[in-house]
Length: 230
Image (cartoon, rainbow, N blue to C red; front, side, top):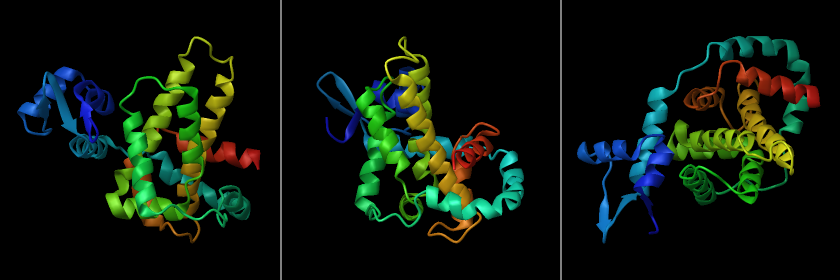
C-alpha cells in the first residue's frame, strides 16, 4: 500500500524485531492501519522514529577533531581535493523535491535485506553525485540526520556484497569499490566544507557528520584513500 510499510519492512528499517514493533504500537511511538488481515504503518512514523533513534545513538568519534588538525599538513592539496569532489560541476543541483524523493528511495531501501546489482549501482551513482549545496539544502529542510539513510544503506549494501556467495567474482568487487568510493566522496565533501568556503558551512558539516555512525578512524581512511588516488 503506497505511503505505508509492512511490519516486517518497518522492523528491517529500524533494525529491531517485529515484536519490538508491537511494543512501539503499544507505546504509541508508531501508529498503524489495519486493512483486512494486514497491518500497515505510515511511512512518516517510521521515518521519524528512524531519525530519532539515529540521533540518540550517534557518537562523535574523537579522531575527527584530530583529523581536522592534521589537515593543516595537506592544505596545499585542498584545491585538487575540491576539484575531484566535483565542486563547480556543471550539473545543476537537485531541487528540494528531488532531494526528498532521493532520501525516500534510500529509506525504502533500508526496508530490504538484499538488493539487486542494479539497485546497488543506482545507490552508488546517487551518493557519488551529491553536492555540498544539496547536503546543506536537505539538512536545512529535514534536519542534520536527514543524510543518515544514505550512509546507513551504503554500509548495509557493502555488508551484503561481502556476504554474497559469488564475492569477489561476477563483478561484485567492482560494485563494492564503486559504493566505497561513493561513500568516501560524500564524507570528503563534508571534510572539505570544514576547511574551505563552500555552500555547506563548517558548523553544519560537523553536525551532519556527528549524526552519522562512522566507525573510528573511518573518516581519516576515506580522505587518505582519496588523496592517494589524486
